[in-house]
Image (cartoon, rainbow, N blue to C red; front, top):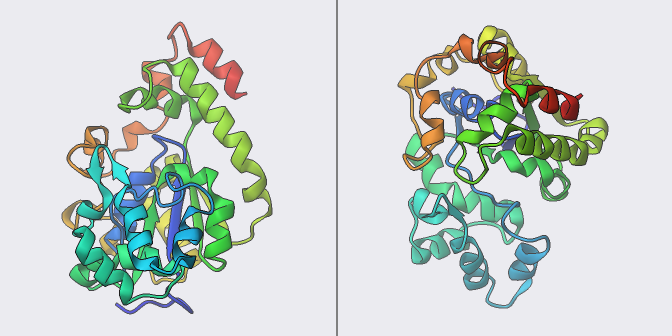
Length: 273
């Protein structure tokens, strides 16, 4: 299937932790024209201006490769997860434009070729705090924000190795991320927001909306994502293992069944209201 886009600009998926971004990424990655790899933290772990500075240097390939080589995901090298050594990534960089767009294209080069895909889907949830930088370098890229009932997100965040198992703390984090990112999504016209609950309850309808938004034809393969490539999550990200099976509608509004009587629920609800 050929891309129906006017161009092949990357698609970005952002959101809050435990809001369904992995599920959405796996669905889109099953589309014949698209591919999605593990989280890159391309913007969130590279400070503003650092990538531009490396690209402007005389030895820009070495400087840029060195910067990307320091990116890690759950203790694993992002370059390694995308099938590169430092040397092979420098060679890939040399094939691409000397731009931020070119660096991301280089990082995805192996995956695009391996899957015969045409277009990149970049999924790093906390890029929701970096949308201004994304838009600066990718002015035409669609940005998809996925949201979930914040009570479910707050309680589910306890599964993450880098957060405390405290729903009150997690609800405060959710509220801060929401407040900081809200102005961008209120003003930017190349964004779409979808609800996790709608995605699991009516996946075909939501995916048709998403593919129309990004300029691709709908494919039934996205519903059967579990039998397609699984390049989105790594084995070390154990909290994502529940996304490898079929769509689970019972995960919507789980807080009502499991946490409604929790001692912290009143505090969580107050923070999120």
